[in-house]
Image 1 (tube, rainbow, N blue to C red):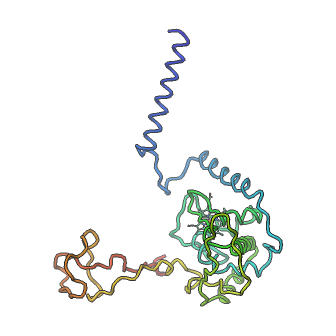
Image 2 (image 1 turned 90 degrees about the horizontal axis):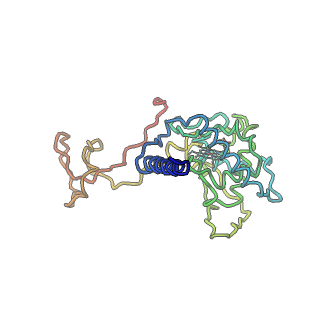
Image 3 (image 1 turned 90 degrees about the vertical axis):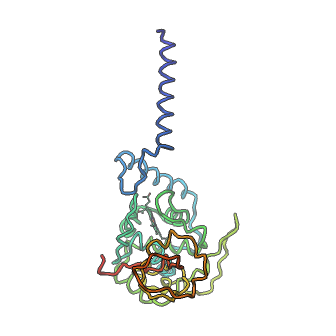
Length: 278
Ligand code: HEC
């Protein structure tokens, strides 16, 4: 065989191999997306380095607005409610562990330890835009500029914030609702203009700030059942909507009866994460 023919054959073979690999990954599902499956070290390094370079590159022309000082404790405290609700479950806070069930890949590091790796603009950029494919949410689409800078200030000050200081803040803001009054969604290209009216930006959705995740995820209200509270729900979710007006008609409470098409409170069970559990 001539060298030219050999090269041609080799090229075709390589193209076929690439196509097969592409097909088995994209449609064949051979690569796992399981978060519990760690990346190979070089892949991990590449993803992490890419993330850091990307944040640095994109935050390079973010300027801290005049009058904003991320070291200002008052500015940071205005974000207490936001931080305790939106960040603590994944990243923890001084004296507060992240929720143990939020196992993520890549992991959400304790910001108390990692915040120093970022400058002010980068912290703001991360909070505003989030990080793709990681679980790190973007607050920009739903929060005003003032809130975003306040949250960045909170993160900036985390490494120097003691558990006592955090607890004292929680105390000061206990019972305040987690007001999202400034969650105006700006039209494309529109700047959010914030007024200076003092508002209760603080608190944790009326829940203790240490464990907002416990109660923040309330199931939607379900039509109250006239049944005895404890009833086996087996089969209920798979069944079609009741074809007869059973809503008010009390069913026999015999638990051994075959499952009937009752309006099952499919999600009415509480999210039990009592202290005893963990
Ligand atoms: C659902 C979990 C989750 C929530 C909630 C969350 N984050 Fe993250 N965050 C992550 C993950 C995961 C990463 C890691 C991304 C990576 O390594 O590529 C991350 C990364 C970061 C980073 C950069 C990496 C580091 O370790 O320094 C900052 C800063 C950050 N988050 C701040 C916040 C702030 C502020 C909030 C609240 C507004 C928040 N995050 C809410 C999951 C979360």
